[in-house]
Image 1 (cartoon, rainbow, N blue to C red):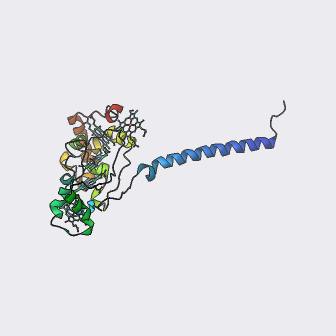
Image 2: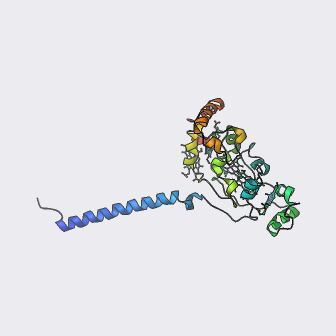
Image 3: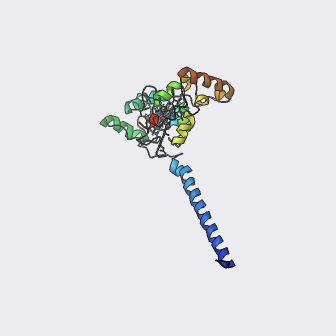
Length: 222
Ligand code: HEC
Ligand code: HEC
Ligand code: HEC
Ligand code: HEC
Ligand code: HEC
């Protein structure tokens, strides 16, 4: 039987197939890279705010607890953003004439809330609840990063589904005593994983957490 293709045609065909294969692979890597890139995940994302509020100064420097401003974080789904009068408990006496704080004074005078731009968000079809996480001892820093070192708020985690599920399937090593959830730096605890491994396992049992059920779609997509 004679050959269908000549030798050179055969080589060309092989080369063409190879190019196609590589192009496909490259496109796959590009899409994958996009999904992982900070552009898509918004990690490190900073937004223009009406006032350049600094967590670094207020939390890291002055040592104000998160719950002073995010008052509903332990009791409801939403952490909540502080109303203007909370800023004014201090700023009616401190930095009263600072131009930087003009929008805060205006907001109080006009009785209109400051229009803070949200940084940490999940899509509307995802249900999230702060209260249960804090009650079980999941610390703010795990999801929001070292807020006490942020001159401007930026996103610390992609907040994508796989990230949520990663913890839901094995929450034990991530749990702390609930009284310590707002603490940003707790290095003595972090440096002794063997101690909290035991703590986490005990708490998972005590709270009746069932990791096998924590990845049911209906928990987050209601
Ligand atoms: C418990 C007191 C307190 C509260 C509450 C408070 N601040 Fe401040 N704020 C301060 C002090 C003290 C400084 C000066 C910090 C410094 O210079 O280190 C400051 C500084 C600032 C500055 C100047 C820039 C900077 O970060 O140094 C801005 C802007 C500001 N605060 C905005 C706000 C806003 C907005 C709120 C409400 C969401 C608020 N503050 C709530 C005490 C407070
Ligand atoms: C003095 C008040 C104050 C304190 C204390 C404070 N925050 Fe905030 N926080 C704010 C204000 C005002 C905003 C909105 C402006 C911004 O994003 O910077 C905010 C925004 C945030 C956001 C971004 C929310 C979003 O989706 O835009 C996170 C996350 C956050 N705070 C976490 C924390 C944590 C964790 C602590 C404690 C370690 C803390 N905050 C302490 C006032 C405060
Ligand atoms: C298990 C992860 C997780 C923990 C722990 C956590 N957060 Fe959040 N936080 C989120 C997610 C996810 C969102 C976005 C929610 C949304 O878009 O509905 C969010 C949103 C916020 C917001 C924006 C306003 C709001 O009401 O949603 C603030 C402020 C905030 N968190 C503060 C805190 C503080 C303070 C703590 C600790 C006391 C904390 N968070 C602990 C995941 C977490
Ligand atoms: C670091 C660990 C951790 C991360 C990250 C985390 N969770 Fe959770 N989540 C928990 C724990 C622990 C519980 C408590 C489970 C229990 O007590 O049964 C919980 C419970 C929940 C519940 C309540 C379940 C119920 O039975 O009502 C919802 C909803 C939820 N998580 C959504 C989310 C979403 C959405 C994300 C991601 C944006 C997320 N979680 C990220 C640890 C985590
Ligand atoms: C612990 C919470 C959690 C659970 C459980 C969960 N999801 Fe999600 N899901 C999310 C979050 C958060 C997002 C948003 C992802 C983003 O913004 O990138 C999401 C997004 C999605 C999307 C949109 C497309 C995408 O992938 O971004 C689909 C479809 C989806 N989930 C299906 C499911 C199904 C099916 C299950 C059950 C097998 C499930 N989810 C369980 C948290 C959860």
